[in-house]
Amino acid sequence: MKYPADRYPLWNDWRWQMQNRVRDAASLARWIPLSDAEREEIENCTVRFRMAVTPYFLSLIDPADPDDPIRRQCIVSSKELIRSEVEKSDHLDEGGRSVTPHIVHRYPDRVLLLATMQCGMYCRHCTRRRIVGESDMTPTVEELDRELDYIRAHPAIRDVLISGGDPLTLPTPRLEEIIRLLRAIPHVDIIRIGTRIPCVLPMRVDGELVSMLKKYHPLWINVQYNHPRELTPESEEALRKLADAGIPLGNQSVLLKGINDDPETMKELLLRLVHDRVRPYYLYQCDLAEGTGHFRTPVSKGIEILHALQGNISGFAVPKYVIDAPGGGGKVPFVYDYARGTEDGRILFENYEGKLFSYPENGGSTDV
Ligand SMILES: *Cc1c(COP(=O)(O)O)cnc(C)c1O
Ligand code: SF4
Image (cartoon, rainbow, N blue to C red; front, side, top):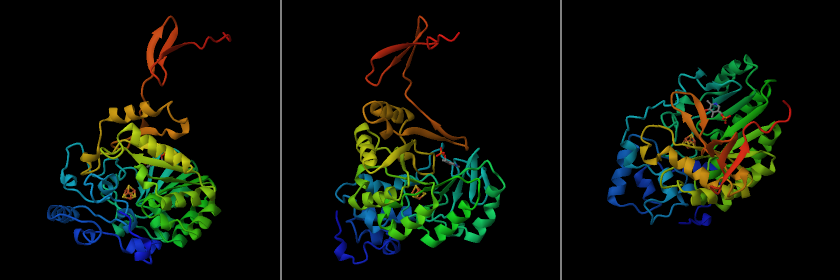
């Protein structure tokens, strides 16, 4: 359904979009038709889990399709109330890896900085759903500045990933203060921002934001698109502004059952992203976050999808398929195994078409 922007004079104002987010069944019913059963389902679920959807993202829903891929990512479902025994609330042990209240240090050379817990929209599959939206978890700049002492004291940290929550929900001057503090640390080389804003609230990517960000290069941004229908003209315009500011863009998708778990949908998404100058970075196996069982596919599904794409589309259009190891082990790539054993000192392997090839195991080296 398309809502003409002229019916809402402030449609392109990101603050209007944030203030008018739909949080309950009654206000959702003003945008899309709901049956009594759907209304009751939403009322029961919003007691347990937070919902907030921008009018912009809602306008992408096809109201006639109960399994619409946009709708399933943003509207609460009674399936979220089902808790599977494999799920834990802090399944990645981010609590255990926290070195300060808002810094998670899991890898040798980089840290995650949780700059805010607010998001443009609360994704139904969110891995941090236990904490997103808790406004009292958002630190002040002064608190963050004190926490940054940890980074200042650890010269091995050369890459800081600002995430949350969604850092682009912060007012631009406040975000700039955080980035400026990080830039002032000599050993911090790369600053990264993880955000879903270009997808769920593209009007937030305004001239003020982009001219601020481009002062702090090398700065990278990772976005999250899960379905080709999210790449609307408005969203592509936001990506264009970021790319034109010289910001390398990556995409982190989540593999979601019934939404993007087939090679055709995934291919359409990936090719559209590279058209928009966004390099597909990760495809995540859906984490074991509470109440997300209905989104999870078998691991073999992810491997199969990447196997179907590898070789058939440009190499840079193919992301890495990763599992974020439960308990805090970090991200681990999973790949189709092309090796088919060895024969007479040669390794046998398949190519992307499944044809068999071989290569001398020792490289046929002449330097012995
Ligand atoms: C994902 C993640 C990073 C960044 O990892 P990359 O693989 O470099 O993108 C850093 N810290 C934490 C805690 C993370 O979860
Ligand atoms: S934008 Fe990111 S942090 Fe926020 S709800 Fe969506 S997945 Fe979670």
